[in-house]
Length: 374
Image 1 (tube, rainbow, N blue to C red):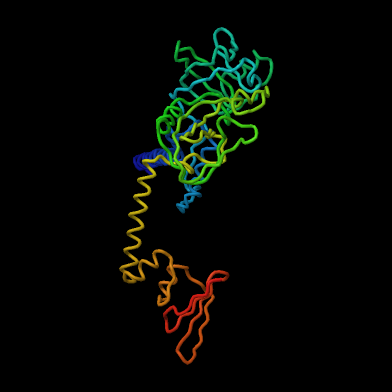
Image 2: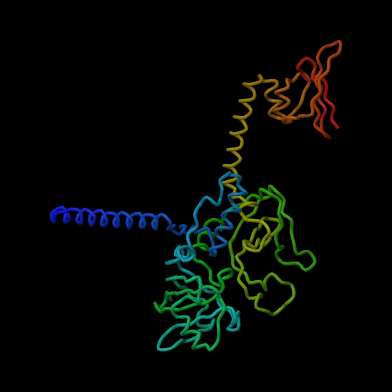
């Protein structure tokens, strides 16, 4: 091989190698970008929700809606990326006694040392979330705090906050499942959606009687009743008849005071066995829903009238069986049954449909001739 040919071959191999590296790098980069999932945008009607609970609640909602979509098809962003949705949001810490959850939550600021803060310095103040680290142990400041405290601290989430009054940086270690701050956008949005609104109970449910009665703590709310709503903050001790002093008594509850001319009740938004939106609808939305259902019902009735003529179409829509109906009409009313028998007699062909424990229908020459109701 001559010198010129050798140089050409080497140059070609170098070009191929370089091209391959660029292409491989490009592919790897594309794969990396594809794997990254952005954090879900924050919805101001949601309170602070930890990473695992967000997806669990979403899956439950999808399954309950019956949308048919597989909730596991959607990729989940990692835990660090998820908590970025809260960065820049304003929060509020209520006032508590200095001993409140002192083993579960820690406030401090960093000057030339770690300076521990108490509730009297934090309570009744607004802060802005700068950053959230889901694991305090993985934070850069962990070893320094541990060294200053002389012990481990087992709370699972670490907040970096800015004091809105003096721009001072404050650090908080607490529980991700039960943080003690109030998320301002959530509270503000809830007030807009509830205060001054009239609600209609769209299902039966129960709430806490107000004023609270030792003998009759719960009041049952009937479907169709009308209530005025007002969002408020209560402490757990406000819902107790007897004074019991413990940490839980000081905990803040999001509650809606529901009232009408006759009664007043407390609906605990977090602690109730019912979701507020599942049992109460604003009067305005209720009227829209009612109108929408009326239009839908009229459309369904008109389709059946067109299919079966006016006399039978209206009866099928009302789910009322009557002599002379066809098999299709009966199927539209009661559904399909596989429990069918056929025989013939002198008057013609007889078919019997049985809906166990409900109806037995006799068809003579294809028309409903007898109805037996169990």
